[in-house]
Amino acid sequence: MSQLHSTSQTLILLPGMVCDQLSWAPVTNSLEGEVKLMTATYPKLDSLAAMAEQVLAMAPATFALAGHSMGGRVAMEICRLAPERVERLCLMATEHTGKPAGETGQQETRARMGMIDLARQQGMRAMAEQWAPSLIAADHPDQAGLIGRVADMIAGQSLDTLQAHITAGEHRQDSASVLSQLTCPMLLIAGEADTLRPASVMAQMQDLITDCQFESIAVCGHMPMMEQPETVSQLMRGWLRKPSTHPSTDDAVALKGSA
Image 1 (cartoon, rainbow, N blue to C red):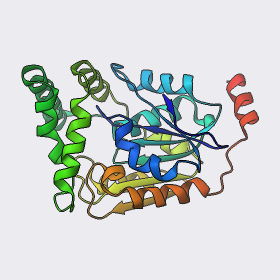
Image 2: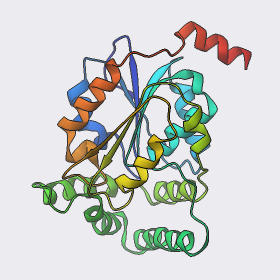
Image 3: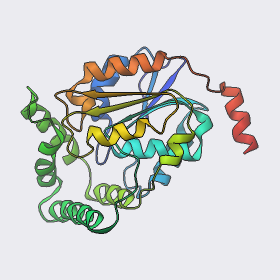
Image 4: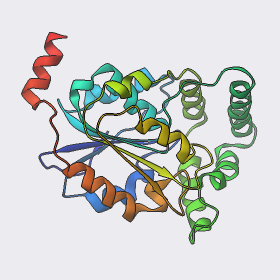
């Protein structure tokens, strides 16, 4: 986990599947100096619980948390394990439901296994170049440049990491009960053109949450932080400044110790 700056409030950023700190870089560049920024990585960990436990082991007593795609799943798992430590939560281009049953779930598994087969046979670069176009809005003015940057980032990950992250996704839990019990300020961000995690799916999460703001961003696919960094940074800045009734650091430590 890399620390980018040091101020009073800590914001932990969680990348998606086979992504890293580069996916969050446009936002961290904007927010640096306003909060203490930490970007987590979890290569080769094959369960969301293990990823969440690793983040918690390296995190301060309390923190703000933002997760993208699979990172959103990790964020929800962190809230399942230690909700008293999460001061506020931002979920981006993700969903809270478990793996679908029946043919829908089987199709998902076949597609993900196809990614592994392609990476094994032709390398991570070939897989990244095939997958990256589906992550960016077709009408984005910098579509080609964004596809290239996303492909470069994914190609830099290992086959072992791809396999581990896909295994983690295969065994994901439904997190509706986790979201319904949270009372901290929450921000949901979706891309209007996201075909992997449609905005309509994220909108359903809003009904489960006590204190929630939902925003769907135009000309944006599955990578809002890279496609529309100024809009995302502005939304997150407002979310970070929103008053919270979360327990103080000392209270959170006491709650953890009494659990």
